[in-house]
Image (cartoon, rainbow, N blue to C red; front, side, top):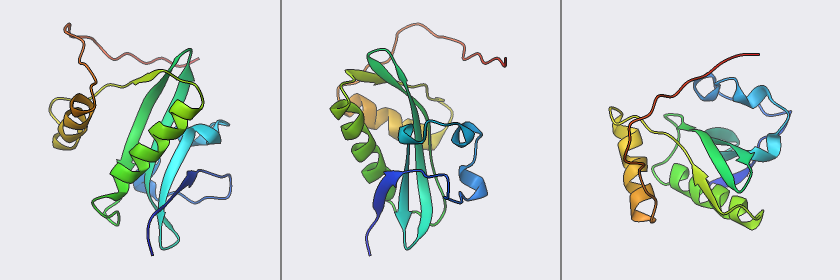
Length: 125
């Protein structure tokens, strides 16, 4: 059986390794999961921001097969584009091997890296 890409639902039970807090929100139509053999093995969390989508989190479990994350990313990006968004923005750590692979995918797809270094800041209301 292959991988199924769909939006997260309120009834889904996420593996601990995929939880980051974002999944608690009400925007389930901005959270995609890859399901294999009845288990969620990967997650992509995004958010709308004017004409672009912010890609907040892309993660997988050890049970994910090598192509599951790629299939998840391609399907989610296709759906975001179909919703009328013109692009995306994300941030990556140059120290992470996994994120370096995503960087290579982004560059191969025509993405760009901003030339100036930036800080990633967060706050709570």
